[in-house]
Image 1 (tube, rainbow, N blue to C red):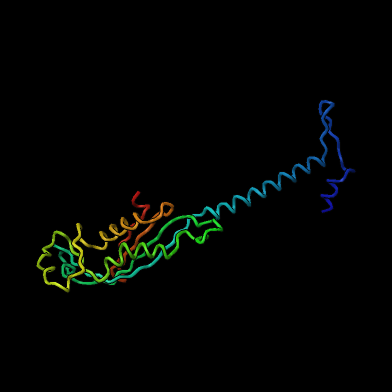
Image 2 (cartoon, one colour; image 1 turned 90 degrees about the vertical axis):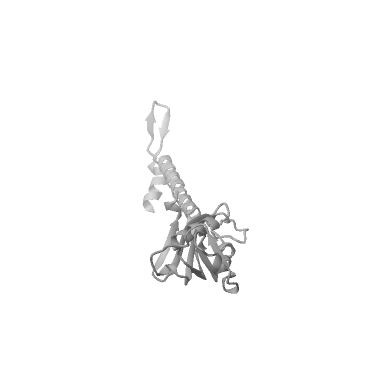
Length: 202
């Protein structure tokens, strides 16, 4: 503190003559240096806050549903009708809302909105249903009546891999424009899952 007082005191003014007309004083140079230092500090704080506000955040929600399927022309046990307790993880990417007047302030996306989209597009549609490929001989099976009222004749083999692709396409169409679908992970069993990631599908 004493050093700064000495620098700014009139007693320590050292005139430097340039071309016999311009004089610079240590006090003025010190004041200018201090001013520039303050400006730089505020600049650093501003960019730090900006980086926080503009940060991209991933938000994930979990969904569960029960579904049966059978794999046509498969060489293993899964060629028979069987069921799974599917667990679906949906991850979206975006910037938190910074509008203090918005009821969604601080959110990338309201979990309730994401829940509504995925439930309507996937869970309500697939839960307690049977999924088979359109290439299978399913006509006789579906003709038995009430046990197969909820069914899906799909244009693909209903593997975990193909379903996760289908689900990703369904969800992408329903998300707000400022929200990106980042990841969809579908667990068929506790130890087996398929995963769709936006970075892999550019």
